[in-house]
Amino acid sequence: MSGLLALLDDVAAIAKVAAASVDDVIGQAAKAGAKAAGAVIDDAAVSPKYVQGFSADRELPIIWRIAKGSIRNKLLVLLPLGLLLSHLAPWAISPLLMLGGAYLCFEGAEKTTHALGRGGTGHTGMPKDPGPQTRDDPAHLEEEKAQGAIKTDFILSAEIMTIALAAIPPSSFWLQTATLAAVAVMITAAVYGAVALIVKADDLGLAMAARGRLALTRRTGQGIVRAMPGVLAALVVIGTAAMLWVGGSIVLHGLHDFGLHSLPDWIKDAANSLAAAAPPSIRPPLAWGVTATLDGIFGLLLGILLLPIGEKLITPLWRRVFR
Image 1 (cartoon, one colour):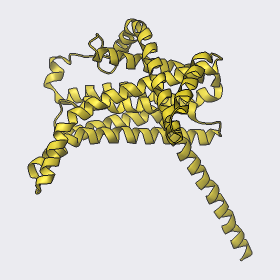
Image 2 (spheres, helix red, strand yellow; image 1 turned 30 degrees about the vertical axis):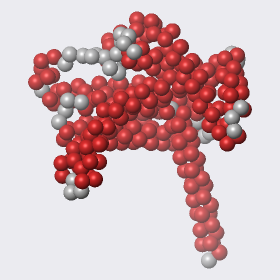
Image 3 (cartoon, rainbow, N blue to C red; image 1 turned 135 degrees about the horizontal axis):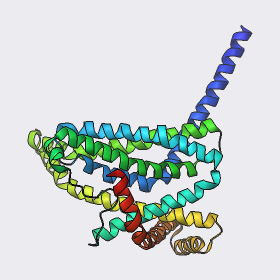
Image 4 (cartoon, rainbow, N blue to C red; image 1 turned 90 degrees about the horizontal axis):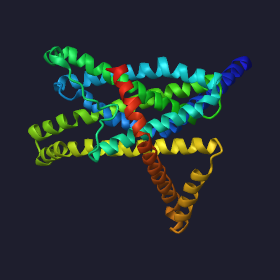
């Protein structure tokens, strides 16, 4: 009997350790995913365009196909590459992260200048004539759109996984692996779940407006349909702002790590000084908001400086590789 009790005690201890490990994985994954907010929002804002022009019954299957490609990108390619990098060349993570941050700044600046009337369509919006065969063959067009979306997702997923990898504190190989895998699954589910809701919202609104038994239901459906263009436009704006904020903060943090403290410290001091003049209850969110705004302004200015390089090098290379 005492042996059985000892065994049960050991099992309980192991279960507690396992539960703590799961908590660690989920907690670290949530924090790492939050660091990748800019790329995540951009991914969610970009993806709905890949189902435009298809019948309603094909929208969810296409999104599911893209989501499966996205999780394969993250788990089978980017996660092993990230783990190899963190164990064989950890010194390279910060420069690669800064490179990804600079790319986010470039992309955000390109979208901003395009919205203001300047040329350029961004790496995810390059027009392409599908040709007569594709236009006449819905299955071929669906295949082309899905593959194009998965290729675009690879770049965004690389940004997300790199940011997440840098955000994970030093830990064991298996905990790091589990955390990155959790980040990959959680972010993919969140992004493509949100995309599915966005894409089908207008269909839901039309159904409510046409078949709702109550006047309130019908009015709500009509409101959803009217609101969706504005929601999609707002997503683009939010995604662009988030890219500039996250990209700018990544580059500034990297500069600080490399001993270039002047600009990062000035932003921190400016945010703290402005927050100090406010009531104590709003000082923390105000300091965060000022910091994020200044990071975003820096990201926009850096992106504008990078536009000539991007338009002469990055965009043509993208077109050549993913055409």
